[in-house]
Image: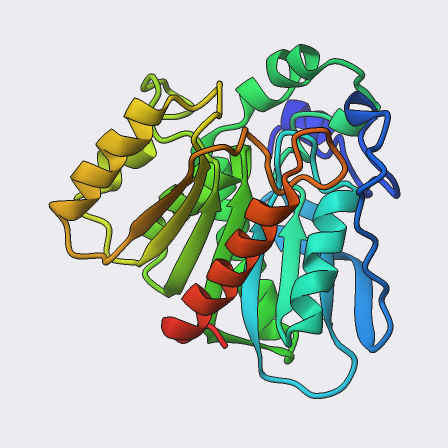
Length: 278
């Protein structure tokens, strides 16, 4: 490791306790899941060049829990993602959300979405993300609490795209659920492949949950993804909610749609159970 790399890493050493500033004010509909009956809080994940923070939640008693990787939106592992982990833990999972932007910057203190994208998110290499998720799976196995033979992944927005890519990257994944993650895009040095590029060869069943009124993910791209998936053998499916906008599960934002979010959450649970992540 060079001195420069050593100085640069790690920018983020701890998770935000609340919500990222860019999403304020917080909507009245925000869901707060308590930690009763759970072990929940921050852990450190050893990675190739140090460690990254992650939020982990699991039942307080027992072991051999199925593992679900929870992948963040552009807002980092803030209060909403931590709550998602606790919701999953209440269902019997070891849910863990590693901070994927740790090396590139702390998005929790930035106040504008475009600033988050330009200063941090646009600089995150897919290869780094895949490696950090591999390390997170290894951590779950070594913890003595997680059963990585029952490994699932779910993610939202930015994390929804990662669900498709990691399900292609790691054959140990039993099933994935991608919430409104973009499926097409330009190939760059940092993001060489998009979900549509791996759709035909995908082996892991992924459930895509998308909004028909998502202005950032046009319906025609989702429909194209559906067609390419049909040429493969993964059994992946996409559900398009006609009246839902982007981020319809984000209960802390005005985009939240309770009916669609609850239906999608149930579909996610059924999907994981169907493919052995339970």
